[in-house]
Length: 177
Image 1: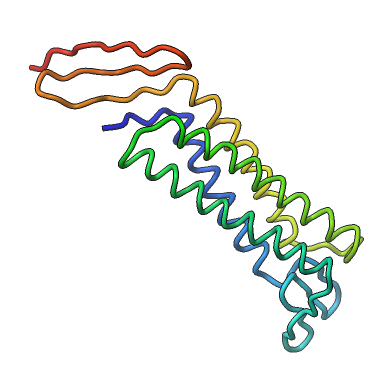
Image 2 (image 1 turned 45 degrees about the vertical axis):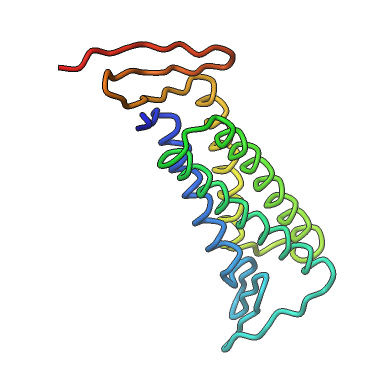
């Protein structure tokens, strides 16, 4: 059984929030909004919505934002495996690295969009992607900090605890009542 630290719980919450913000942000047609016109990565809307043409830069932005979302989902899967099935510090490290890569891809997509597509009238879906990147970076930092002092409780007939730190492993036997 794994004892989750507060840092791991907070990191998991932040990364779930990042995944939700990223999904809503890159799927909604509100990256740019003014008067009766809204546009996102996939469609633009006036009185009705139409498919957004996919130029070279728009294709790159879509790819970066989509891969970032997929990475955020992979992070959540890795952390759930770590928590529920296989406590392994390498899964935490892989999750942290994926969080930083996802944040970098989100920021890269945002920068390309601002430079190439729109310079003003940015709307709430655009901001949600920025929030997703910030949450992913903070979650990644917390995962790295948590990895340094990770506690795993190993069940057995006599009971016991194993504390795994950066370089050493200490086993402590706990008497059961």
